[in-house]
Length: 218
Image (tube, rainbow, N blue to C red; front, side):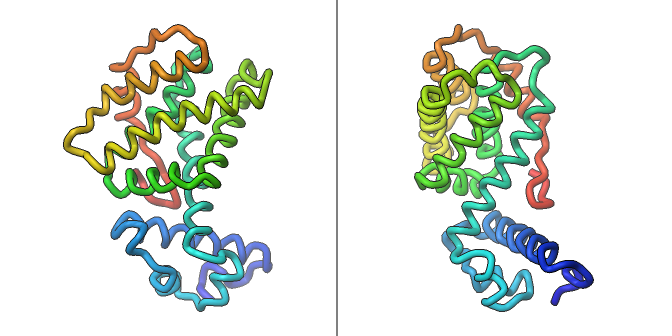
């Protein structure tokens, strides 16, 4: 048993172990990429046996899905702190989606992880649901028709995913400003909102944000 787990209840030990697994996995993903990371490496990094890992996660894919949702929670909390005062719901959504693009521009490894997450329907759908809940939390105006909202958010996140893919596959041809501008236009069109977003101000805000995910500053 690692020192972090001693003297705690079973539930506390399980949660601490889960966080340790996520910490180690993210470090490995950022260091060598998702595909090259194995559960054996995660076990070695955390210092546990197979049984301890598989009592919580059945596979690397399960670890990844949990990690992405934890990362989304951390990112959305930070974005909430940096939203312009009095921002309308569409501006809030554009800032959030722009954040995904900005984070990917900081690291090809982050771009890879986000591309993978958008390419897996079960994770993509969870992200859309989480965005819906986040928007409803920061602004209840969009919570009138949850089915319609979910479809609109799916369209907006899918558009963002297209640019994430391009950023990852063709980084030399990617222009962050243009991508954010197009995503802002997509959000405005899908949400039936006037497209008057200040792209330069958004990029300035995004560049100033720092994110702490599993103890790693991004």
